[in-house]
Picture 1 (tube, helix red, strand yellow):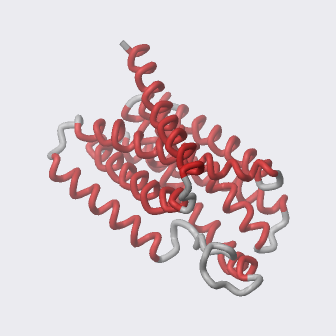
Picture 2 (spheres, one colour; picture 1 turned 30 degrees about the vertical axis):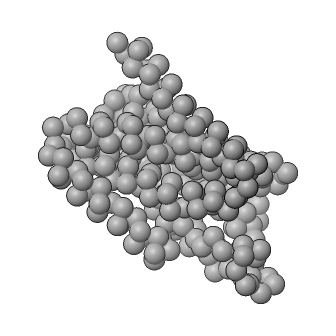
Length: 262
């Protein structure tokens, strides 16, 4: 197998193993509060990966800028529509979120959304696999930072999905098994991306642009609104620090790998 495909598969395995392990541990401990910290860190990593690395890489591939901006626009609207039809992720409404829900609303909603979460997450994992394959086909450092950004988002998502699956009546073992299946789904996406994009290199800038649209949309429409719920200065300062740390992590990794490459 080509080194790009091997790197993509190893990255996906590492993402799956890390996120599932942490999801299982965090879901049953007081450390579940770390989800909020991961959300802030994820915002910094996802936005910096999209705006400082993936998009610049796409624009350096001698494609008309107008085409990539149209692709970015289409990507943002597509993610909006996918979310609108509850394909990408389940509703985040819950008891105590400020809305008027009857007692037992969480469990009722979980029962309806359990299988939808699995379908939506599976679709998302295929997209992640294609994205990681495309990034590693471009170059190693972009593949690495893309994988790290996905990992930062995957951990809080896995924790949230894992908890909802348990509330929906899944046993811990069953929920863990279904979560592990997403790693196989991501690897399938990596194979699809690799064998498609390797033979059509001209598609890579468009895939990178669509991936950037996904990162930007998730960060701005999903993660940042969750951060806005913490409105005091005492709660906001750690968020700002963690966003900056997320940006710094991507910057340092890129700078280090660039220096090593040269």
